[in-house]
Amino acid sequence: MLAGKKILLGITGGIAAYKTPLLIRELIKAGAEVQVVMSRAAQQFVTPLTLATLSRREVITEMFPDASANASHRWTQHIDLALWADVMFIAPATAHTIAKITHGFADDMLTTLVLALRCPLALAPTMDVDMFLNRTTQMNIDALKGTGCFVIDPDEGELASGLAGPGRLPETDKLLAFIDDILEKVHQDLTGKHVLVTAGPTQEPIDPVRYIGNRSSGKMGFAVAAAASLRGAQATLISGPVALKTPRNVHRIDVRTAREMQAATLARFEKADVVIMTAAVADYAVVNPAHEKIKREQQSGNELTLTLTKNPDILKSLGEKKTHQILVGFALETHNGVAYAQEKLQRKNLDVIVLNNPNEEGAGFNTDTNIVSILTPDGKVEQLPRKSKFDVANMILDRVKMKLTWSV
Ligand code: PMT
Image 1 (tube, rainbow, N blue to C red):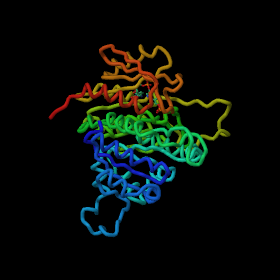
Image 2 (cartoon, helix red, strand yellow; image 1 turned 90 degrees about the vertical axis):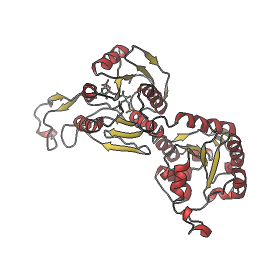
Image 3 (tube, protein in one colour; image 1 turned 90 degrees about the horizontal axis):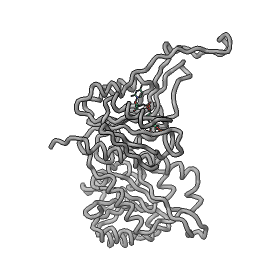
Image 4 (cartoon, protein in one colour; image 1 turned 45 degrees about the horizontal axis):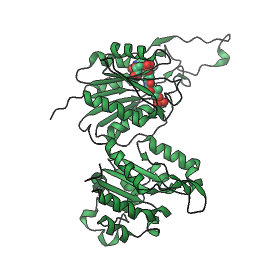
């Protein structure tokens, strides 16, 4: 996959920067074009001249280089390069740079480029073991993974400090395979298609303080939206209340209740080519939620009775309206999964249904992985092993792609 690909290689200030000349040499050998962007600290470890010689391109070190500040081709260089690249890979990625990227800082060329990217972003976190295992660093890495960023785990072994543990930059062969794999995963095969995704729970108010909800974190739906966007689709994400960052280049609409989710979905249905309903929509809402907080002291007896009413079945209503759209539902089942999923597939007029079980370890709510079966109307049931939610998302999109019709 590397031949002819345009790679933005970000290098930040860690001792492992001394290994990047070899990485550049191998990328060039594989036929890739490499544009190096260095942080200031990185230049303490390896010189721009070395990297420019190997990459056969000027290395970018400054946002505003003095000599060329007035050169017109530099005015929008951060945007031009961001659009030019097929992938941006930051290796080594220090804890500091990872923190800056997580929080959207743009205080040098490297981090500014990250914000402007449309292509996949990949990182090789490389640092001393305690910095890597530090809770903040781990939280930042998890947050970036959640927005669709690809992360290669550091190798374990002896570190420059003399300590041992995870933190080493993986060997060049491993890095090349990692980039190659990303390029394969995110080939732009959904360009021109509009993918509408629902995610997270819905919350049905009881009073201004309390609600009926469920344990959905939104991770599955956010992974689908991120994967669709990375594959070139125009991705719209309609999300219930969750604590996740919006994946890059995804248009997000926040809703709270099932009825709000239904309205937002229906309004965008006509223009959608694909709809993927990962949301855990509450099946019931409270009739006449209280406008003021229900006071415990004012209730007589030990019981509080709430009257619930059925919420609309959003997916079923889409199935009834569908014309050209590919409709994908999820089925969350604890028992008789295949039979219930097949029944939902037919009743809701779906093209694909993805079955998962919340009681299985590593599947369902608030996990980074899922264990799913993919069912289609021809009776096929594909059981997949445990995979990251991002990989599951791509496997669903692979099945969807086969069903899409393409006009030229
Ligand atoms: O968000 P995460 O923490 O990552 O967890 C992911 C998940 C477990 C929520 C996800 O993988 C999942 O299974 N989503 C579907 C949950 C669900 O509501 O399943 P269901 O079998 O009750 O519903 C079947 C389908 O109908 C779903 O696509 C659902 O979005 C849809 N539905 C359900 C009820 C309703 N009133 N309207 C709907 O459109």
